[in-house]
Amino acid sequence: MKKKLIAALLLMALVCSLFTVFASAEDGHSIYTFDKLSFSGKDFDGNKIDDSVFKKAELTWIKVYYYSREDKFSNAIPDLRRTAQFCEEFKDADIQVLVVLHSFEKKLSANEADSLLEEAGVDFKCIPVCEGLRPLCTTYMVTNAFADSKGRLLMPFANDSKFLECDEEEITEARKYALGHYPEYGTRLDQTMPGSYDEETTRLFLSILTGDEETANGIEAEVAKREAKEKDMSLLEFSTEDSNGKECDSSMLSDAELNLLFFWEPWSTTCINQMYYVKKLYDDYKDKGLQVIGVYSAENGPKAINAQGAAYPNIVKSTDFNKFATGFVPTFMLVDGEGKIITHDVDKSMIKDNPELSEELLAEVYVGAETYEMLEELVTDYLKIPAVSKSAGEGTETDEEID
Image 1: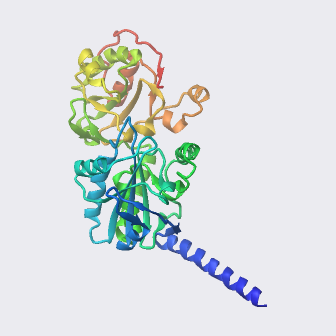
Image 2: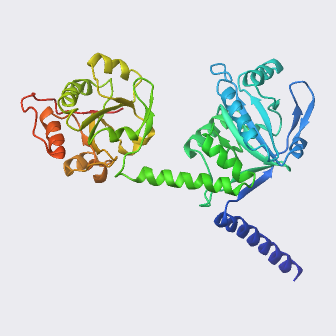
């Protein structure tokens, strides 16, 4: 009878704990708590260091940096500076930073640790990897972990009750490498956050872990709003820079009644040939309501622009354009002055040959090189104006796949 009572009480405790986790995830955010991280060793000055350091703050932000002969600590310096900025932003919370340095190639010295902190301009506690901390270490240049005042590793939940996690395949490969060479390393990689996270994600982590629900909810609302925009295939919004390095955004679309976006790359011979017809179209219709905007991503874009004498605006392809990617260049898109994408009938054979392309996407882009006459017809039909020329010659009708 006594055993049954104990079993029942244990079951009730388990159910209650599970309910607490998921109920708080629905109402706000929750934090999953893992086992205590116990460690002991010596710092770079030879002084004893152990897990009692966690008692000095409510939250310890553990930054694990990997040293390699090739990259040294190149990623650590900017990451440490960002970490210091976040600590200043969350200065009202009780946060301390513990920097852990490790290498599979050499024993790190106190001078190397001091130089790293000095160059980054931070004054964090910095120690070499020691017994108990190796499970956090892999070949990732940066690994983040968070622990409470009892030394238990923490992982935040988002509002949808999913872990904020990085790429599972990358984690698996990093763990395989670490465990294959050093069996005591990398075993807690699923309880950490490998990689240097962007500011928005880092701020969300810290907001959840410090109980700042207002900030966390605000970030997630912004993310949801942005994701909704990203899924909206009817409107084009972007923020980037032009070929001269000047900032620009989708407000430039209002400079004309009709915008022809020309997606090209300087390594593509087809694109370079196509620029002749695009340039002529721009010259013929720039005073009749048309604006041509070239969109490219390769570094030597400005060189090709100058070589071809392309006077129309050219901008760097930002992530805002990813939802319109087809995997081919050149491609074209028609957008009105308000940023609304002008759709057209879809060539179903294109979907048959390229099943990864959706009908919705193909209704908004023109894949492949076009003749001058074809581009001119698109422009004059929309602007309802007569064609300037019908004898500009034919362009190639091939396209190149992006590697």
